[in-house]
Amino acid sequence: MTAARVAALCGGVGGAKLADGLLHTLPGDTLGVIVNTGDDFEHLGLHVSPDIDTVVYTLAGLANPDTGWGRRDESWSFMAALGALGGPTWFRLGDGDLAMHVERTRRLAAGEPLSAIVCDLARRLGIAARIVPMTDARLRTRVLSDEGAIDFQDYFVRRQCGPRVRGIAFDGAPACRPAPGVNELLRDPALGAIVICPSNPYLSIDPILAVPGLRESLRAARVPVVAVSPLIAGAAVKGPTAKIMAELGRPIGADEVARHYDDLIDGFVLDVRDAALAATIGVPVRLTDTLMKTPDDRRRVALECLRLAHDLAHGPSKEPSNDGAPDPSPDPLHDRSPDPLPDPLPGRSHAPAPRPDPMAAAAPGGERP
Ligand code: FO1
Image (tube, rainbow, N blue to C red; front, side, top):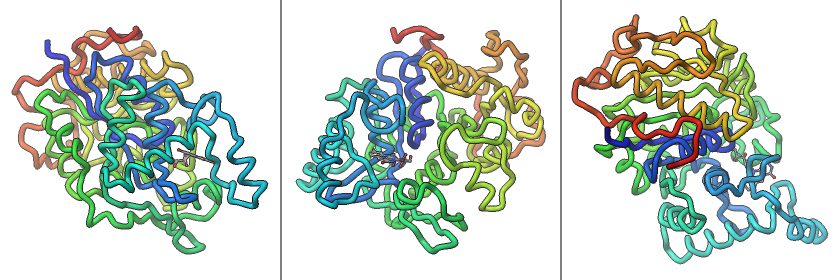
C-alpha cells in the first residue's frame, strides 16, 4: 500500500499536540500542517506568529510543557530587563523564543515570505513535517466584543478572554491568497486524509477557512476530511471555546462543533465522555479519549483520526478503537443518514477510485519508522 500524505489544519496548543501525534504516527515526511496566522501581530517591533511557533516548537520537541506555547527550559532576563525599564510585559517573550521573533522579523524585512522562512526554520530544527502558514498575506483576527473591536492578542492574553464576544472578524481576509504549499498539500495526488485538529473552531480554524479559496479546496478534496472535537463534556481542554460558544448564543457541545464544520467534514472524532452525542452528529463518528496529556495520548488520537479516514475511504477496518468501545459506525460510507452534504463534489468520500491509504505504514503506538 502507498503511504499516504496527511494534511492537518491547526491552531495553537491543542492542535499542535495532535499534529505531533500525527508526526510520530505517520511515516517519513508525509505530514503537512496548515497553520493559523490570524493571531500574528507586531509587538515590540517584532513580527510574532504564536500558532506557527507553537507548532514548530511542539514538533521540534522544544515546547514548554507547562504553558504549551513558548520554549522549554526558557529564561526570562529580557522580560525582567524590559519591565525594569517600564516596557510592556503583558505578552511574555522568553530569551530563547526572542531569537525566533528577531530572526523572522529580520528575514521578513529583507523581503522573504513568511512561508519560506517557516519552512527553513522548521528544517533547521529538524522537523520532518511540512509546516505552512495559511497565507503569507496579512490577515488579522479581531474580536468584536461588547467593548468594541479588540485585536486578538489584546483579547486573548492582555484581557484574558474577558470581554464578551459578539462576533469575530478576519481583517484583510478578502485580499489574502493561500501561501505557497497550501494548495499543493490539499491537492497532492498522494493525499489520503485531511484532519481538522482540536483547535478553537471560531478563533483558530475559521481564520484558515477565511482565506479565499481554502474552504473550496477542502470541499473539493477527494479524500476524507475528519475533525477532532476540541470539547470534552462541554468544556474546552484549554482556552475559551465554550465561553465563546455561549456568548455567540450557540449550544455548547461537541455536536455543535461538528455542525459548525457541517459542509466540510466526512467524519468526526468524539471524546468517549460525549458518546451520547454520537447519534446526533450527521457524519460517522469515532470515539476515543481525546485528552492528550502524554505522547502516547497524542499518538492514540492521531491513530483514531487515521483509522476513521481509512474507514471512510475504504470501508471499516478490523481494528477496534482504543477505548474498546464498539465502532459506532460499522459502515460509515453507507451509514450517513440523513446525508448532511448535498454532495456537490461527485465522488467525494464515495469515490471508487483507489486512494492512498492513510493507515499504510502508520506506526500504531510506536516510534516513527
Ligand atoms: N499566551 C499567554 O497567555 N501569555 C503570554 O504571555 C504569551 C506569550 C507568547 C509568546 C510567544 C508565543 O508564540 C505565544 C505566546 N502566547 C502567550 C500564546 C499565544 O498568544 C496564544 O496561545 C495563541 O495566540 C492562541 O493560540
